[in-house]
Length: 545
Image 1: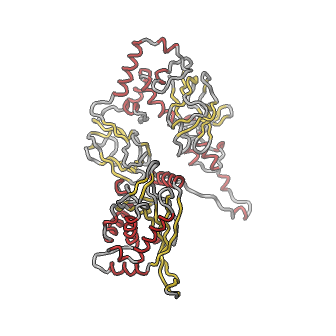
Image 2: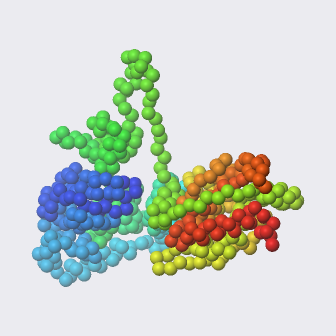
């Protein structure tokens, strides 16, 4: 039976690959472990081994061409096998055997179509397929943080099925269906793309192995699934096309030697090279003993390295030590968004230093009012909101064909959390009082650290403030939070000698840095905004008038 080979994911950040060289051509015999092609990823050019034996019947991506991960790369099967059904919808290959296709009768065609339709639509009555939900506008994949139900549990509509970690927060995911949890597609800590199979709910005892198979996921081994597998030849070509990519992507690679050849998965080989590990010392745990990623990660050097030192100088040598931590969805998205901002928006920076004497006195007086507590950061947020109303150019957004000048002021306040940085948004900040701003920021910060913010609370900012003053940082620069046009970095208030009325006296100052997108905010525009901001912060009573 023909096997579909898809573009493999050869690195953790790989989204598409380019075929650098084909080492096999259509019609060639392929053995398990043979190098099919060299694939250029986002990090390196790597060898791609075949997990199947047979004849290379079709090449879907020519040398120099690029395609997405999991898209059709090649087809391997028996010599002369008809693969026209597999290629339907994906562009038939000129190399595909055509005489076999001609010999196929109209009745055979109708039967194949009818059977394929039955396989793809054959979901038992009352069964609901639950997919990875899109819980935020930027979410591309999610991680199951915690399952609150296990296979076999009864589920009611509205029950919390799991906690899903998105790029912004960990959120509860409710069930929209009632029944028994028949299948769990992801374990805790595992990730999958949006719309991937997450779970199946239906009547207790229902066999859902066919549903799992047709969805492109590997179901847990069970007698019923083995029976289903034995009937595979009856399935239509489309059903095979759905099942094959998953088999190709998840089949363990091999690492035993055959005639002196060492078998190792491309990813394991790359990691071993980076870590300087001799593959001949690694015992493979994959199918037939192939070395896979986990073997490299769990590899311990031979005990000889721990033998008693021959001299005092050897004993004094240190041992390199490190640990690896998988990137969370939040960390991945932060890296992607900030990289896009830094390398697409032309940043420039304006630095100022404000006299904080009046602001300190003002805050002290306000905090003497019963049940009132404001911070210097609240004063900065309020002052920025007032200044942005007067300078809409700084409160703008850039698009390819236009510029949007926002007349509402929504200020994002950067909050540090364990996995990185989130930016909850104080909506219509110019209309809020200082105590209201203070209460909102305090609430956001607390829920951000517990990953309880909703996506809506982190969307819609028109300007951003990042404050590291509480950590003693006097000055720093920030990367603009797209699609904003500017971000203000706020440093600590420091006591220092200053000149007032021609005399050197002790004063308190605070340094700020405004990062601007030069496409929307010219230097003079940014400078005028800072002058207005200076007036509000150095004379905070003016903000209340």
